[in-house]
Length: 110
Length: 185
Image 1 (cartoon, rainbow over the protein chains, first blue to last red):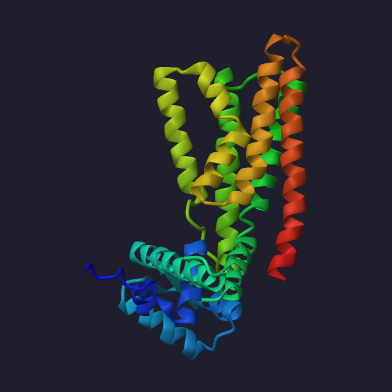
Image 2: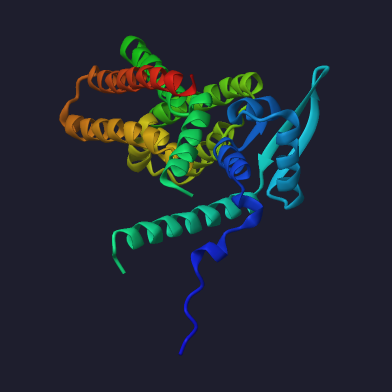
């Protein structure tokens, strides 16, 4: 007997799946890049919280953090990388599959 | 992930898009630029570039205006330029114009490079369905009008057609800006 296909939940990417990281990657996928204050205000995060999540994503090469100055003001931008876009797309596909599976189970479809 | 969470992520995308003026900005700038070029054609009735390049030049100037405006917006809001930056779109259009000049595919070029068509192609590149739908409908109507008017030899027809297209883009741009204001709060 052939092995059953693995459950889609097993394909979730732990680097991306956490709610705040998923939201960060979604925003950066749409914006290309965004600065710290914008991300903080949009997602309602503290400086420390945002920094921690971005560092975790940057450690996996999912985002690129660029620190610089504009005039005398320091400004930090976070940009999504091609790896980050691919990871987000894969995660959304798995989540959509899971949702579809859940709904079909509830409605009694095979 | 529940349906609610999926909706939250979609809403997040819409808010980022609204912060970028991603739909209203191109509609307004292309609309105003098209009206300016149509107004010039109606009053001066002289092409300052070879005729087939007139409307492609309008599209190129609109993209360059968007690019420079977007730089200011980016610095103010802290939101990047998205998937297909206007500067890159302008470079692609410039390459198409240069290639078109070399092989001189005059009739095709005149039709393909109308501003609303350029806007639609760019919107597809940016995966902005809202902008693609609006500009696509206007592009279709304008191209239809161009075919319908091919028998009309009057000087006023082209400026009138393009002016109406530009006005439609501008009106849609203002309406879209109101919607974006509500989304971004």
